[in-house]
Every structure is written in C-alpha cells, then in structure tokens.
Image (cartoon, rainbow, N blue to C red):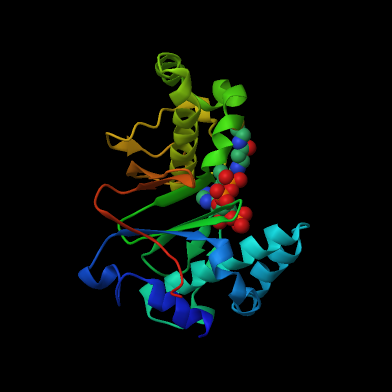
Length: 241
Ligand SMILES: CC(C)(COP(=O)(O)OP(=O)(O)OC[C@H]1O[C@@H](n2cnc3c(N)ncnc32)[C@H](O)[C@@H]1OP(=O)(O)O)[C@@H](O)C(=O)NCCC(=O)NCCS
C-alpha cells in the first residue's frame, strides 16, 4: 500500500472532519509506526522542505521531519481535495506554515518521534506536542515559562503533579504563540494560558481569539491546540496492520 492510501485509510472516515463544514482538526502521529514509508514520504516534499530535512544532522531528526512534512501535505490534500504535491503550503517570514490563497490556517509540531498537525477553517490555529518524558526537564525553567499567578498555582500543587502541570502549561503556551503566528517574540512568562476561557492572541502579528484544549496522551505525550472557539475534531493516526 502506498503512503497516501495508508494515510487515507488511517483517517476516521472519508472526508473527515470537514464533510460537515467549518471546524478545526488535530492529528497526532507516532513516527515509528510510519517508518516503512520514509523514502516515499521524502518524495512527496517540495524543494524547500527537502532542504530543511537535509540540513538536520541526526538521522532520527531527518526521518521525523520528513514524516511531519509529508503528513502535513497529506492532511491538507485531504481537506483541499487535491494531490499532495499541489497543496499550496509555504511559510511566512516568521516561519509559520501558511496555505496560500485559501481560508485554511494550519500548524505543525514535531518532537522526539511525535508529530502533531492542526488545520482550521475557523481562524488562527496553533498546535504543540511534547513527549511526556520531558516533564522532568521543566522545573528549572519554570520561572521563564510561568506568569507569576501560574507560578503561585504550581507551588500549591503536590510535588508529584507539578512537573506534568508545568509541561501542560508549556504546550498550551506554545500552541497559543503559534496560533498568534509568532515564535518566542512574546515571552511565555508575560501571559497566562488558562484552558477555561477565550483568550486574545498574544503579540501583534494576528488579530483574533482562541481557546486552548489540552490533549493528555498519558505516558506518551502532552499536546495542546489553540484555535477559534468551537469544536476540535482530533484523532491518533496509525496505519492499519
Ligand atoms: C514555533 C516555536 C515557538 C516552537 O518551536 P518548537 O517547540 O521548538 O518546535 P515544534 O516542532 O513544536 O514547532 C516547530 C514548527 O512550528 C512552526 N512554526 C515556526 N515558526 C512559527 C511561527 N512564527 N508561528 C507559528 N508556527 C511556527 C513550523 O512549522 C515549525 O516546524 P519547522 O521548524 O520544521 O518548520 C519556535 O519558533 C520557537 O521559537 N521555539 C523556541 C522555544 C524557546 O526558545 N523556548 C525557551 C523559552 S523558556
């Protein structure tokens, strides 16, 4: 089975989820499950994407980025109903992925064998994924990640919950920064990222609002999507067989 076919079969249903109209979707992928298609994935990339892959020094990073870019194209090709090579996917001056001439906004994250992709027809969208094992690295940068009110809330947590809560905040803030179309132009400790209310996008690059949804992948990952208020369809994408 070729990669586009395997990808299509892994989706929950034909036309998912834009068959019903406007919305936001998020997919999560473990790269090792798709490694048999690495060469085919590379062949789907445009020249810019190939150059970005080949600049990575570690083979694992090259494989992960290849799969991330290929799956990004495949998901957009499903939504846009065109061939993967015809997806008008580029990036703006800040590095944010953009779909030219279309109402879709999109976001990508890849880390340690994991890929997360978001697409929205409802407005700005950002996604971030981190392996759960990174929680242990977070405590020493808490002061740079957290707003003072968040630091106080973390201090009140039992030790056993603090590291994971911090990683949750990290993915939420990265997702919001990506929805805003900025990297670290606004520092994380300058804004809060609660998941229970509508938030203004930080910075000046994009107007709009977003709510943040946290995805708890247990021992595997933590991820967050920041998107215009409304439903988010999500799926873990694994090839059959
Ligand atoms: C986008 C960003 C915020 C997150 O990057 P990251 O967490 O390292 O990596 P992720 O895989 O989750 O996301 C990278 C993807 O985000 C997208 N991206 C890049 N710039 C972006 C921007 N301005 N807006 C939205 N998305 C962007 C790209 O698709 C990028 O993939 P690519 O590098 O393969 O092209 C990055 O620009 C950044 O600045 N990271 C630095 C984090 C940091 O320094 N933290 C220390 C503070 S305590």
